[in-house]
Image (cartoon, rainbow, N blue to C red; front, top):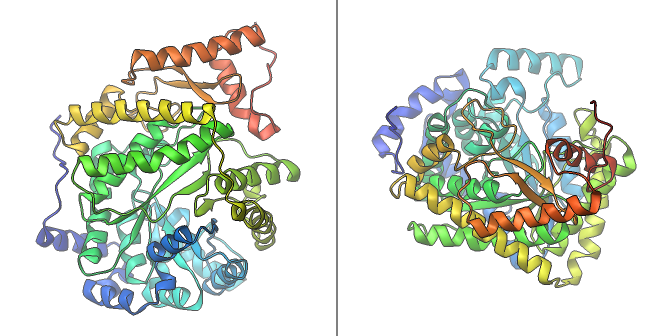
Length: 492
């Protein structure tokens, strides 16, 4: 099948034509037809509402802030929630859109919004940004001391981005591998890249006129225990696709999985890898205002309160020791449903304590284990990205499509039907994530031998074969307050 997408900036005239179809998806799209009015509104806002400027300042000052999750349908309740977060010193504010919005079901979102207003109770699992329209969204932006970063999925990504930026929001993920990993079952990689290119071109339009909007990169999140090399490689691909459309600010997210040496190693090597490929492909002007230590979303959440606090504050602690400017965290009751206002407060107070006590000490941690993890991650990510570029004859977009097709980019238990799903991960004796099955990942043989040796050490210690069952046990371990899975009784 012919690949039509290319790593080429969309012509402005063509982009403006494409906008017409996007804005026609719902009547509020007519409110934001004038892009230059949106640019002017962005320029009228203070620096304290620009995500890039706030994160950069926090990073330069050696401080640390929380990057939580939040989103409720009623405007006044959303303002109340965000102001409560502001009182805790939280100004980087993701805005979670509801499921109907994410699936272009705006009529159902409207019904849910009206029912929420009528009853005073949330009937949607997020904020219906399209249905609220530019007037309400700007009221939210102006009423709070926050820079907003709305979350969406592929189907509604373009219209949500249009509405968000016209409303004064200054960041948004452009992570098409995250859609492949956990949100979109049938979309092809090419369709996902086309959607990402639209948002990147929109951000590029603003950037050309002096408004810097940041895109955060999530990469392909595995749905099982797994080294983060594919995730990091696909984050960088996402960043390069965005940069190709004119994006000037990207924010990497480092998923922290429980092995302190591996987590700190990833924190340190990832910015270097981003810069290496920005320079290599001619995007040296793309800025990284800061990186985020992220509570990895793939593990089952502890069901007890003590375990939930432990899981969350581990992420806060490692992010603090890694000296990153922000930590992306859930709340202690995330596993039970939509978080309450009280749980937001208690969760973030606990994490702020760690930031205020640990981060301010600027403790430098380094040892042979951390250095080794940095070298392994660098070697794996480099091997994967260089092979992707080779497959695309230097075109990262074409290479990404062919890479998934060939299993050069692969991840376990992906929901997307186009993924090979031939790789599998497991933990070693110290709890670091290793490869159990390599699939077609283009890793050097010495790197594969390293993984095999680490698993042999655990096999010798536990007296059992490292296999699929152990991988699943490791997957559940964190929810039980452990790093390694406890052997389960297996059926004969």
